[in-house]
Image (cartoon, rainbow, N blue to C red; front, side, top):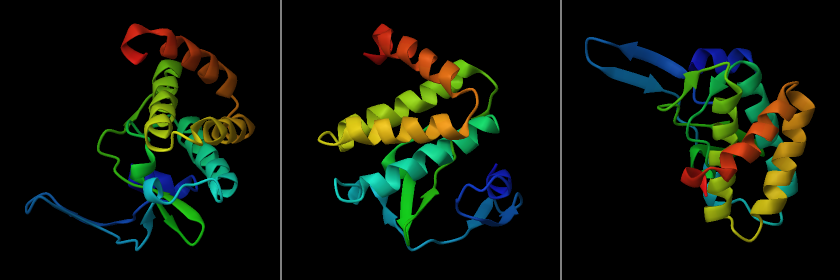
Length: 151
């Protein structure tokens, strides 16, 4: 998964080595700041469109992150890096992509409650520009949000 991200232009930690024998995965260290602690009114207009582009690239390549939160994003020199692909998987399903966006929206609501609506609007706007199936995903997102489990 991590190798694919580099080829599609999504910044993430680079894989250095894997040892099945020792059960060790070595990854690049990035001295970034957790986005959850730094996203605010001042920088959201710069950062949120980048998040929308990243999610669009993932979904265009049928990659579902599975835990899209600002806690799983690092900020380094105005670049957003995705981390923690432990719940990620490949899927062509519109439903899976809508749930991925729903998780992002819920994370914004809970962690960035004063700016979440504007943030998600910026993310969705950029998502639409960079992912041709975005309208189907956003329509499905509305249905996902109407379900009892996600209210």
